[in-house]
Length: 345
Image 1 (cartoon, helix red, strand yellow):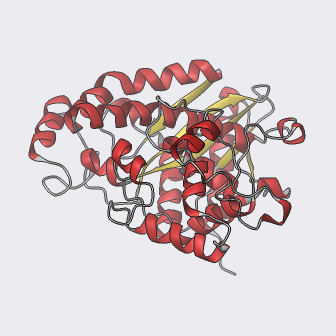
Image 2 (image 1 turned 180 degrees about the horizontal axis):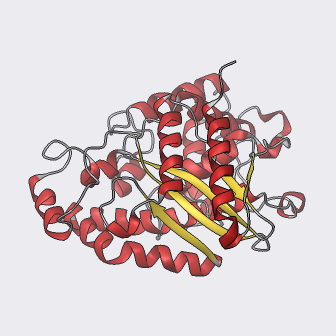
Image 3 (image 1 turned 135 degrees about the vertical axis):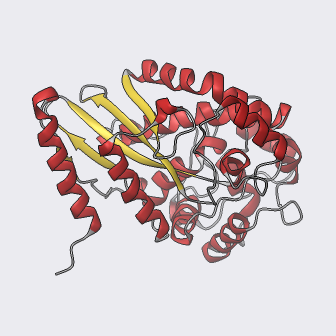
């Protein structure tokens, strides 16, 4: 019988945990439980994980780097749009984002065309299904802004919905959903994605205002401090580690290197990665991949192909021992390595 690579990884994790037990107590691998509630549709978590860095519903109108997901839904869905048509539109846009095909011209003028990020088709499909069938979070300011910018189009995006409230979005989740206990995976993802959002917002802002070289300086001076500040906010240990560091402080340890290889294998097969969770009596370790998109390649792509000579010179000045170049789209550049207490809920 052929053994799953994931099962092998669990055994490796258990073995490593035994070696660590003298220091902090043995960890056991925890499988990620799949949500059963309809409101916990797979696409919801995929949307929050893959989209909210730029399209968060919580960012203010003036302090964001992309339109909220509800705006995308309103522009792509009307009363005649079928689910199949909406999924096809999302697939086409994600595969080839470009100004000529953009339906949100105002967003393109303000934010530019989104970076090309080749998500697996199954991931896009699940996200689009969730957006089409369910109410999705929207910023408090969105409804008034949308009606002001689109007079006479109130209710666009209502769709068919089968009573699900499709298209209108929602300002707050129901009391029932608010009271649901977060899983350890949810907590780990929240810590990783909120930190990623802070870093992404600052990085994108530097690129838009001052160019890629300014982003190199930002990473050199502030990225580690921002990560540490989010660790303080969440009362957790939050690290971004890699097998090919630019900053030696981001070098993965032996256990983390094994998980990096595992995630590389999953992403290379065009599969959606799942978090790895290890827990003991008091705390949880959470691991999740960091993958590259078009924006990343400006500093982490192939020298003189993706990285301009000017940026390359800046990188060599700031990081003479840099190993973090040569990546292509949608490759694992490292992982989130997060540790938090079980009472951090």
